[in-house]
Length: 481
Image (cartoon, rainbow, N blue to C red; front, side, top):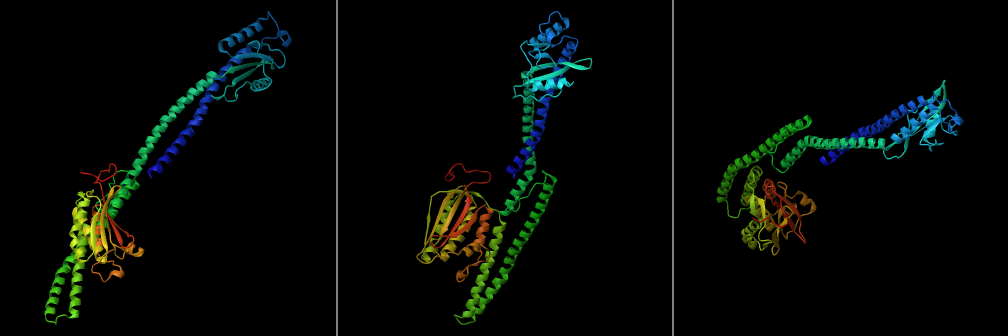
């Protein structure tokens, strides 16, 4: 969720900063240009004030000497050009006529472009006030014109044509400052987004972890409702209340099963004793009494399995680093006598040492139940193979038999309480052995899976973690002690 929420927040914040940055950059460029324009307007107004006292016409101004006012105007324009590098001139209304004064002397007003537009605007009696914006990547010049008014008429136009290098440099510098500010703001925004998503999603992660723990059997997991938004804190409190209720209900169910199994053992034992006493008074080989005796023993076995299941679901696992291969070999050796009696081959294949984290007693009991089932359903002359191997961060113990196997529908139900295949009802058992196995493994973080064995039979895979809590597997191969 963080990988989806964090980019969304960053994109939104970047959009806000860009939406603020572009107008700010435009205002900086406009401000720098307006500063130059105002300065040029002041200059052209000063030159216009000098030019309005020059009375020489276009033909008289050419080569005129001795006109003090015209000489002063020309001297001012020359000094202005020499000092600032800005071209300036005073032009008569007739654009084709020689200028009243200009600097440098070879400069003439273009017939087209921004200079011509500014000239026409000044002829209408208006000063240049809004020339087109010059951006840092443009190498244009800035033209400003002011009319020369005498007796209410525009007799000439003062035009300045300025280079824009310094203005563009100042604009670019302002943009760099804005960019640096935007970058710093973006870094702060990213940091704030990380903190915000962490603050919002931390309770969700804790809730997800607690949910996973409860789903895998660790019913004591709870969520600390001390951080995060109020809605998530309320959700955490509701989750804790729900977990408490679920744990209480499960505890009551386990207690009921254990108490019922325990309380029924005494009456059942007394009933079996009376059956045995009754059998003494009946002829040997009486079919009904034999059937009653078998059903009574089957009921006692079911009660024992129910009690074992309740204890398996309630007890905590004693996890320790265990040699899984050695434990599997030991259990295979323990069942060899039964295998020989059933005329079924039984052997362990695989590495001599593979370590993993498991409860040795629980894993031994689970392996006993699986091997017992395999020997029960494997016909004479067939073979049961027990092997162990590493699979990533787990250790797998595989028990493959040569029995009839299970169909796809049966594979989906195997391990359910009291479930037995209709094809195997004549084989002794309560239908609780694999349920007990699953409960024993789940308490220690292990799993049990079922799949068809090739070419026939059932393949049962028991997996346990290779690492303890908080550890990580480093590199391939088994973990050595």
